[in-house]
Length: 112
Image (cartoon, rainbow, N blue to C red; front, side, top):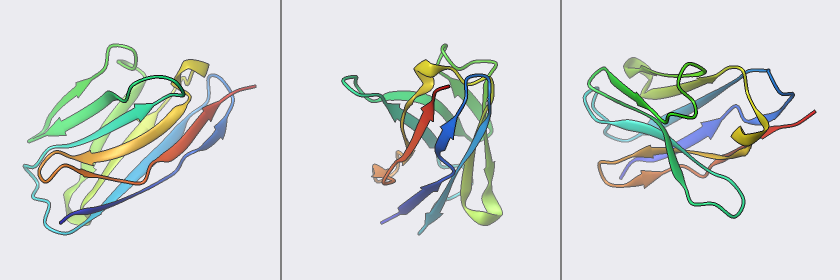
């Protein structure tokens, strides 16, 4: 069983940046997919970014602004979020599809 712990959320002004980190404990191989999802109030959870064997995919709404990366030595996946908008406000979750493991979520609020 993989356990995931996210960190790095918070309050930021529009146009600002945040860096989310997710550390996995348990067996996660470098080729296993890792992803970030988000869920805004009243909306369904949606895929933000995914990385698997070096291939990155992004939701259209975040392309060019968000970057997903991994540090396999640390079993960590990072989401760098730039040019944040109010519509990026949500709880962000780390996910490992293998075993369907989810983190507890970290709140990101973009507001002036």
